[in-house]
Length: 254
Image 1 (cartoon, rainbow, N blue to C red):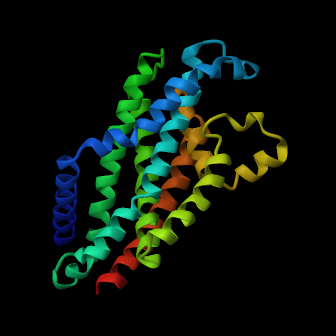
Image 2 (tube, rainbow, N blue to C red; image 1 turned 120 degrees about the vertical axis):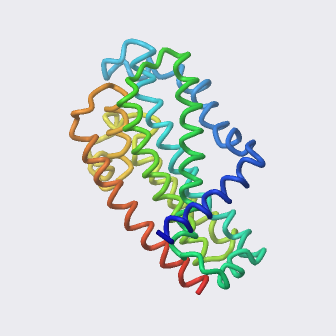
């Protein structure tokens, strides 16, 4: 019971800080909106070899990848705020409180999840004006996938931030990880366009399974194996990431 109370206290505090300056929610969706407005119109002719013949089908391919992109990058760069807290002594002062060390991580990560879902909602609503159509049940399951990705990536980012304790080290490290993850997940274009060797390499990228599963949900194919495979892979990695990051928090504040 104490753990849930501590998590809620940290989450409520972090949400209060976010709501004081909600502009960051909209800043976070600026780049995805630019992709939606300036890149997506090119998709129908580009995807015609895959049988895409309408704007609605093109956006069912593109928007899920865009949302996964938002979840990955939105989570991986949350560690910069934690480094600022370290420098300000916020984490140091946590040592004298009885708050669970696990709650210190989970409360922050859940704030990131809520922020991501709000941003995903904005992107989805905008995409409706471009003929995107998706069933609400499939959409909610897709959002669950996104929430798990955001929880995983933000936990990893916090754990790495606690380990390196420097923006100068965190920035190149996160970029080095994010770029191959992006290119090997088929976020912008499906990997059906890729040569065989690239598809084989991409199978080792868990986010490619998440992208395929999310696309299946947006297409209304909830029974597709990729949906459940993606959810399973992301869930396992999320548990491992949260466990590792919580250990880093415990080491930093004990």
